[in-house]
Image 1 (cartoon, rainbow, N blue to C red):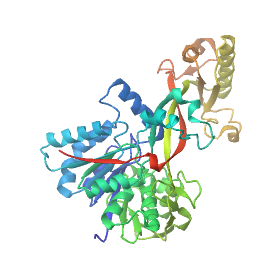
Image 2: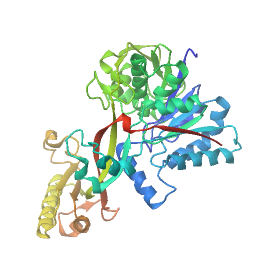
Image 3: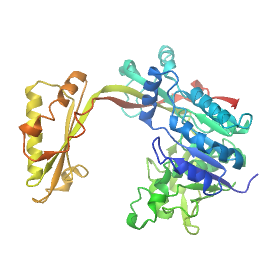
Length: 455
């Protein structure tokens, strides 16, 4: 058994800093690289992509990244775990295999493929057999939105990842794998933690939670003395240095920017946390109130004392469904009387939309630079404010009505208050709205499948 395992966070979301995982692999020693690509709405986007092209449906950025770092990973024996497979895990794995072969690594790379999370095709089966799927926040039954569902994915935990690693996989890719499981699984594999060792599973889960958002725990998006954080253009992403007993240190590579201290780790711990005593994952119910933090040198924070409780009998399901259409456009009004001009334009536009008889569920106005962040709490701005951006959006079930709105913003330039600019982007774009429907499903109905393919 190793005395220490290093798991590096390389992506906090699909679209995160492209150089971060490369730096994690090349700027210092690590054993594992975890890459989190998926948010709730991402699955529906990928599902739509696949409906247009059966070869799509996964995060293609992951394939481009592996093309760059796979030789390094093979040379240094760094294993990579990712949920980049989206709704086409096999397609993603096949693209990785082709990438390995193109780089002369045939026979040197095993790819673990974890599936079982995508239940879109099973929703009718569940309905026919009386499986009660309802919105866990509102109680609304799935039948109320069934005809609008775009994607349905179970949050799978570490079990499939651990199995893939035990079978020798160097690259493991799945669909809606939990971001915490991507860190927990390597620790379970290396240290031999069992699936009922609740305290250590909780520790590994919390380690994953700390690094799942990339640089958010190493100086990025940090409130505390943000202006004193060094070299953010070269920000280092976080690394977990874990021990078999469940204690670990959060750090980053030497020579990188950013900052790891107790405050930066605390801020990330609060991210998306509900009940601090019951952070529920597929693997364990982690107790955040048990966490202890202590400085452990420059850019090092020790995390210890963690306890946990048995997991639940349910998986969480992320369901996305079509919920209408929206469009948002902006105009910028200049001094003098910038704010007054923007308010007048807002009033004119609302009157014109009403006269046209357009139906919207919501019309939302924000005055950027005045109150878009703090709403009414911002108070009235000074009279000499140099400019104000009017941001005007509509949402409704009629795509035609939303499209008609997009043709009403530009006319304000010559038929409304003076000194307007900021319309270089043209008419607002009509976009389909994806709504989130969280639910629970018994674990007994879900089978995690693991396949190993060789490059």
